[in-house]
Image: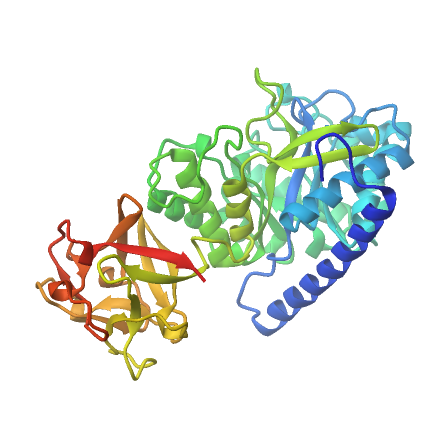
Amino acid sequence: MTLTSGPSRSTRSLRRLLIALVATALAAAASLTVSTSPANAATSQFRGMNWAVLGDNFSTGTLVVQGLSQSDSNATVRAKADALYDDMASTMGINTVRLPINTHTVANTTWWNAYRGAIDAATARGWKVILAYWEDGAASGGRIINLAAWNSMWSSVTNTYGSNSNVYFEPMNEPHGYSSAEWRNIAADWLDYHYSAPANRVLIGGTGYSQDLRDICNDSRFNSTLLSFHHYAFFYSAMTYDAFRSHIQTRLGNCASRAVATEFGAPMSTGLNYGDANSTDNFVRHIRAMAQVMRDNQMGGTYWPALGGKPGNIGYDWYSMYALSGSGTNLNLTVRNTSGADRIRYAWGDTIGGGDSTYRINVRHSGKAMDVQQPNTDNGARVGQYTYNGNAWQQWQFQDAGSGYWRLISQHSGKCLDVVNASTADGAELIQYTCGSGTNQQFQMVANGSYFQLRARHSSKCVDVPSASTADGVILKQYPCNTGTNQQWSRTAI
């Protein structure tokens, strides 16, 4: 993929075939997960992006998403969409697109027939499409201006796509002009009226700006539907990572298993590092918290936006994941912020460095590796240093524990690095133990040049090789933090 020219038609066709095969495998895996674990979320199959109008989707006219032109034919729209979908899939493994509609768009038969090329291009490759209604102009204040026109629009859409199992329907984006009771009645009436749309392919937005699912979740009229959830940092005052995480989980209510995060996002144009668990930036904290809640609940989501949105004074939405280049039907996308893209993929369950990568952890003074002693699958097995030889009990994963702390998990046993008995005493040994919520299993990585200390949360003491020994088998202990190289560690991805 280049910025100046796109792949040839044959290359794109081959890429699409490969993407389709991968998508089929992913879908099969997702269906197995859902069928064997009914208590878990059933929305992890939504790995998506919003494709929006540049200037936002609130419009008193037809909606023409960025990259398309209202003069485009159905074939041209489809070719452009295929080019963009190829790049979304190849860069992030995307399999879902959320597209806006309004009454003007569907009523304009010429443009609606052309715009449908974007829907049909997605479903032809096995992607899911979420069709979401945007109020017909921001001045309507989060309400439907004309219920008759709205129902007429939806009748046309559901009659066309109700039988297509890849198309999902979102009656209204952010119904913030209604009280909870009003919105729930409107949504319930929609379900009754538009019966050609199967309830399990309908996403009912939460109250307000779709940011609270609790009332919808507790209304039995929506027991068979999916739910649409939005969360942005700018909705609220600044919070810590843990506060954001709790806030998001609370507003999902008891229905995270049916929720799709159809909008969430943060700046991708300013170089923020979304892989930094110690960041104090509010946007980084928010995206990391949102990603973790989605991952914890196996929630799918559609990031806002891939393209389009509010351009401000820079010509594009600073939240947009992709930069668009090319011309005609030869369009290309490049990711604006790799760490942001990785964090979204982490939310979808992908293995991403810093969250799931496996590491060898070496102490600076001896160069030896953190090692679980034999028998190295038992609770209470002691952890020491040993010459690295590639064994799984010398390999560790870092799991985000919140507030800048990490759990270190043995690749061999799946158990956590632990200060024995949650002792705060000098000389307390490091062991492995079944992972839990104890702060004696949570460690802060305190940077010291290219090395870091591992500081136990419960005691504020550091993981230490006693007496700076260089011998194999020396057991690690905690001691007050100091500048010794026997308390300085590095990690190398395996």
